[in-house]
Length: 320
Image 1 (cartoon, helix red, strand yellow):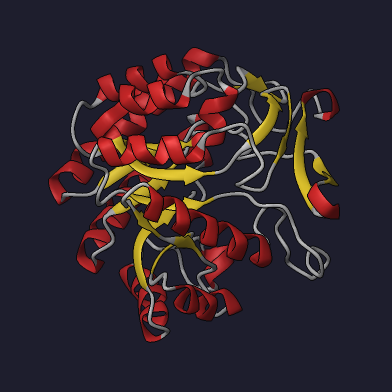
Image 2 (cartoon, one colour; image 1 turned 90 degrees about the vertical axis):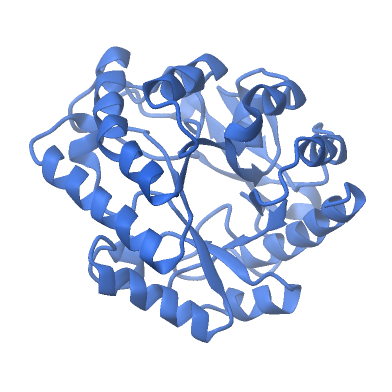
């Protein structure tokens, strides 16, 4: 596998730190609220992000997250057809700019959700989730599971053939947390069977999996067996660990969880994931960070420096 990092799409100290860590391939979320540019289905907007990072010595190899508002797509609302056409334009822009991977999710209503922070190792601030502390209802239309599936099928049938034609890969991220519902909204991507059903809608190389270790672990599956189950369908690996269940868990430093990371990385090596990118995912906030404006819990800089050193060691020990 090859190590990449998730970086802001605007100048940030992490850009220089990536170069100093020897990580020059990056993934970004190119949504307009983060870039300060028009949405990335407009070619020049995405090209500008790529150019800025290239000038800093970094190559954008993947996009992650909703690149613009996809509520109409995920909720089946008016404006869906226009949003799907814009998504196809985005895919075309990615192909032209040499961005081969799009990590996406289909969490309707809200994205990945955490309740707050708890003291972690050495006083670090670790993000946690508690279903008991989560509001029982959210604003907007509440969908049943089959309605979410219908909306997902419409999405995949509209965009996956274009991704395949362009030689791109799309990696579906699990629901986070992988619960059957959150805040009254059904969630459907919380099992291996659901991912198999998603693949059956468009069985092609473009239709891949983002193997987010912690979320698959929270599904109660064996991670080694799950990696072998998906095999070449894995397009991206998110490395993180948790303690607890899908209903109540805390996120950990990469070296303190129960997952045998080295054994799992050796499985990735055995499965010949030579060109599959991986990145460290959520990390606790370490001393001196976490209170600055704009800080996103789980994405502290210091924790990622530690995590990337650990991941580099795993890759070396596993034979890359």
